[in-house]
Length: 217
Image 1 (cartoon, rainbow, N blue to C red):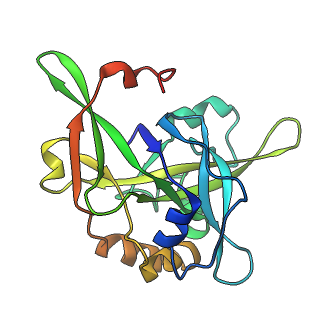
Image 2: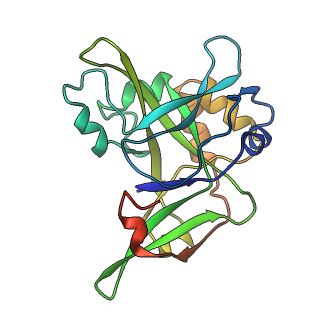
Image 3: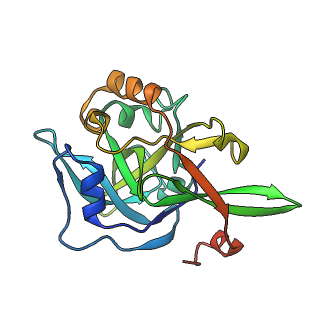
């Protein structure tokens, strides 16, 4: 799974990563964060309604399906397993029509060592950015306002990543046509992209256990 990630980037880096996607970015640079946690907002790339471009919106991490009665369930829907995403009631409609991309500079996983959960920071050896594949949904709040939320898609880890954790986010590569296909294609396109996606060259190192505290940034 992925339960925390970092956001240390500029829009210029995101635009360079997504070259060919025709991305519209905000005028102000993204807020830096070294411990993005579930239920927090983060910049997400969503498709434009017309054309094949994309734009940036602030979405809350933790997907709320339209039928959700309590927004608290979003905290348990931060990840969608690729193996079941097309069938799970919470994710299947978003899988068909509402896929997004979530830029990050890295993420954390925890491994039990000597009875203690040791956090590790994971990042791409070749690129300052990771681009997580995700889903987003629209949820109508009790006051009538709409809230947009997202989840990250995860899949089984492969070596050498499996030495650290058995799951990893689905990540797409820089300047690839798959970025546009992920946002604008249909469910069959998305499946083909996910099946063919090779993980980036991930490296990791241990970090202070302070990151286990959501208030620590």
